[in-house]
Image (cartoon, rainbow, N blue to C red; front, side, top):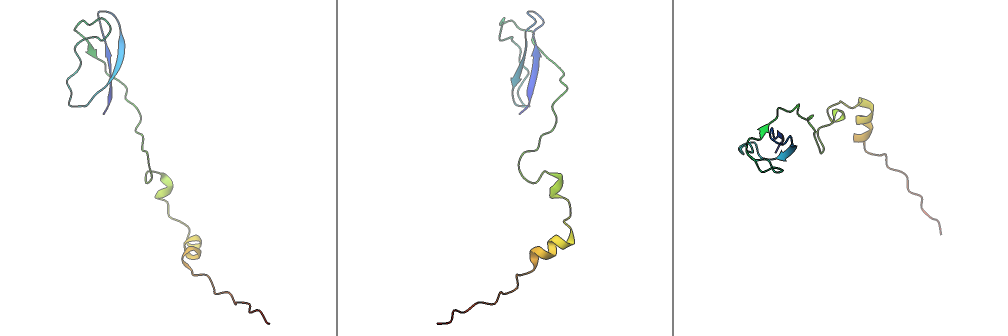
Length: 84
């Protein structure tokens, strides 16, 4: 849900309100309680992606040498038997 900016032309109070896009614009000022509040045109905020899957490095191809070493099974090591 976006944050909208409002200004009251009667008392000059400016404030922000977090509300749904479906909600009607506010009509009364929370400070002076008079009607006539206007919604301001804001510049907006940058788009923020949170979580995994949104990073540039997630889409880069890995080098073939690192992929090959990651998929090769390790060679079996000879076991040392203890002589008794």
